[in-house]
Length: 68
Image (cartoon, rainbow, N blue to C red):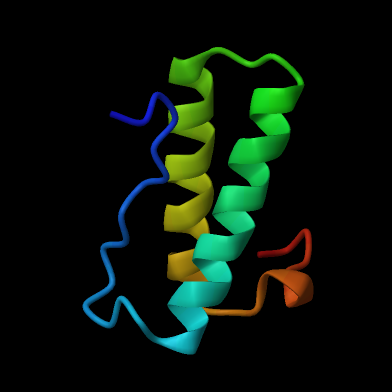
């Protein structure tokens, strides 16, 4: 069992390009948090809410602004 699972998508189209982009960003965040020594619970929560936010705004993560 993976100690730091990437949260599963709530989107019905799991293989869509948008979802793949979100998953890659969430995975990168998870890896960075792991390397910097965050606790498993913190990593789980940060990645979960980052994924939910990116799914909610329905924008490319590169195009997000402070107003989002």
